[in-house]
Every structure is written in C-alpha cells, then in structure tokens.
Length: 266
Image (cartoon, rainbow, N blue to C red; front, top):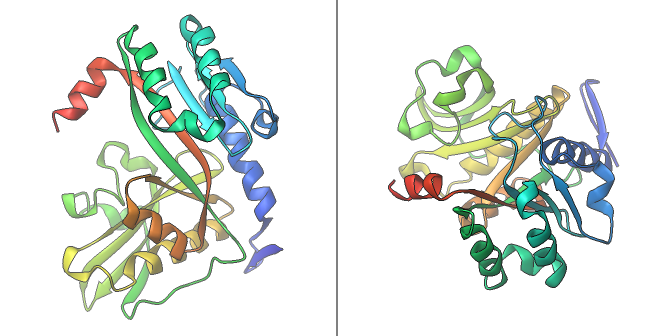
C-alpha cells in the first residue's frame, strides 16, 4: 500500500522502514543491511555529522535490534566483551534483565552504566488516520512556539534545541492551549514526535488526535515521523498504538557513571 497526501508524498511501509534503518546505520557507523542479517554485528562507533542531533557520538556501547539480530556500536576497548554478550543470549533477552545485568557488570569495569532503554515506533500507513477529540486542532510552526517553552510542554518542545522544533499541532479549548504535539527535526529524513496534554484534559483522546495529525503533517512534508517511549511508559505506548504507530526497533545505550549519577539526582 502506498500513502498519498495532496500530491506531496508517496511512500510505503517498507520504504519507511528502510529510511529508519538507513538513519540507524548512520547513527551506529554500520550498514543498513546489517539490521536484516540473521547473525549479530559489532562495529566501532564513529562521529557522523548526519546522526540524530541529540546523540553524542561516538557511542561507548549502543545496542539496536529491528527484530532479526543485535547490532552493537561500541568503543574498541569493549568490542570483544560486547560481542561475547550478544552472542550468548537470544536477541530479545539482550535488552532486558536479568541478562542485561551481565552487560552492565562488564560496563562497570570501565566506569560506564546502562543508561537508556527505549522502544521506537513508526507509522503504519494502513492504520494511520486523522483522529478527532472534540477540541479544535491547529497546525503550529516555529514562530508559534516562542512562549511555549515551559514545563507544561517539555515533552513536545525542547528548550535546549529550539532550532529543531519545526512543526506542531495544538489542541484548544476555546482560546486555551490544552494539548501540544511537537516534532523536532532530529535528522535530515526523520522528525521525532513529542506530546503533552494538561492533566485535567487527559483520557479524552487528545494525545492520539495530536499524534495522528502531526504524523500526517510530517509525512506531507516529505519526512518520516517517529515516536519514542520507555518500555515502562504504558500510557505513551498505548498512545503510539492508538495513533497508528507500531513498534519497530529497540535500543539500549550506555553512558558514563558520572552521567548516570547526575541524572539520578533529578
């Protein structure tokens, strides 16, 4: 099935997947085809100006799976140990305890820790459609975000990278902004979606209405929308599914002990 919108964009689910794999390959210093292999792959991480803008490269240890295998992008000093780890356990178990503790124990020898564990979603063009919530939705552009860098909208917008916040959809109750979907132009081909809804307006379908419309707006502009959620964030995962997104890849990233300790201070 191909997706059409106002003559601006045409792409299949398979082609969207290939775009995501190509970007992951850029981020991880590997080949796109590596994610489709049956055997695991370990490569040395390198800097790349075309990576997702929020990434800090080179990775010390980053694991990604699109379901077939594990691709690891690592520092040379830990290459053999990571390779032994991912080849010891089934693919899915490499990304969760108790097996993940084995990798973390290895990382601790180098003052590193498991830091991020996330699931990434792409739109399913057979399911993605505009959803209604009973409130007015408006498309917003960068100039509309100027006064919105507040705690209420910290998932939809990122004050540290304002220049990447390029498009949004707002939900309004009269003149009041009650929900905001924003996307950041994290790389040339893919824009990431973030959603915030005021507490008193939640559980009314606003998040899914914002997510679905913003995804359609991104596609219309010739970019691939993607959505990230922590595995434990059930509400966010439910919103992704309801909005027409499906889980496509998982990722585990290590950071320094100092970085993890700072994050744990809140």
